[in-house]
Structures are given as structure tokens and as C-alpha cells.
Length: 158
Image (cartoon, rainbow, N blue to C red):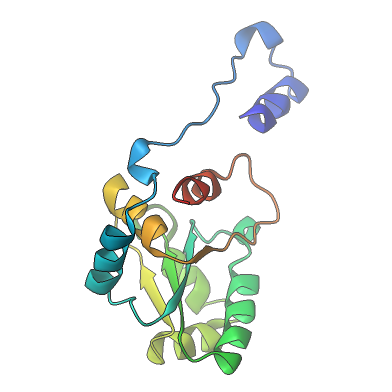
């Protein structure tokens, strides 16, 4: 990303050594037909809920605590909301970050009440695309990010 290139330049890497390649999105992230979307929401068990999605490593710059606090407030006003968090256990132990954070009790309560579903295992790009295509709203409370590809992917789904 240009942000990363700027960081390299500030660190003394010569401009001639850098080339920024624009991010793109796979066509697998394009919108589903209304029928296919309805079917996928049925298969995922999301048909009766308004579904929020968050895809990240849940590191501190992703602001997972803000995400959990804000979503918890929604559940007190709306009973049919669901938050799907796609983390990354293999590289970041994402769920452990939430379980040991200042919002651990809120996180566990949301899991127990079935308002929150955490997915930590590696999944294919097709499955990630299906989550984006089947959710209603993407949440990205990041404080900083070089390039937030999940936002671009979500926008591509319509």
C-alpha cells in the first residue's frame, strides 16, 4: 500500500526500490443474487437476524474492545442482532485476546447469548466471501491500518 511505501521511504529505502501495487478484490466477492443470498443466510442460520461482520486479527489497532462494547449496547436494544467475528487463531490467538481483555465478561456473555459467533479457524477465500455477501453490515473500528482489505471486500459485495 502507499501507506507502507511511505513508511519504507521514511526509513531510508530509496524510492527506486519501491513499487506500490494497488489492492484488488476477487470477483468471488461480488454480490449474490437475492435468491442465493437468502439461501446462504438460511444455511448459515442468519435468516432471522441482522448480521454484523468483522474480519481481523483482533490486535490492539483493530480496537476489538470498542467493537464488543458497541455491539453489546446494540443487543440491549435489539434482540435480533448477531455479530460474526472472523479471527485468526493460527497466527494471532485472536479469541485469547478477547478473553483476557477488559471486555472479557461482555465477550463471553455475548457468546453465551448467541448474539456473537466467533470463527477462528482458517477458511477459504470463498467462505470469507460468503460471510461478506450474507451479512448486513461490516464493522471496522480500526484506529490505524495500512490497507483495510476486508472493507474493500465488503464494499464489493454490495
